[in-house]
Length: 66
Image (cartoon, rainbow, N blue to C red):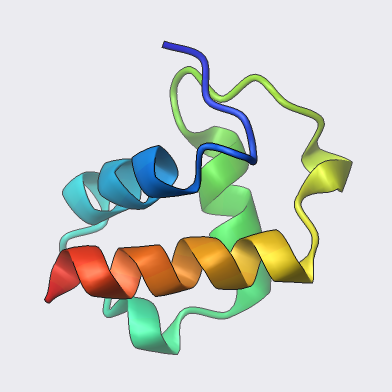
């Protein structure tokens, strides 16, 4: 499966499964951006991952972790 920045929920699920030792409430956007780009199957332009999409991913990840 190829992930794009618009796949917010799928990205959040992948991060929740892979980063079990991380509390998503305290992740900075530089780390979050890097982790998303490094996900297997991620196939989008890294530069498209702006603050709004990172906020959406972080929010979805927080919900997934609860």
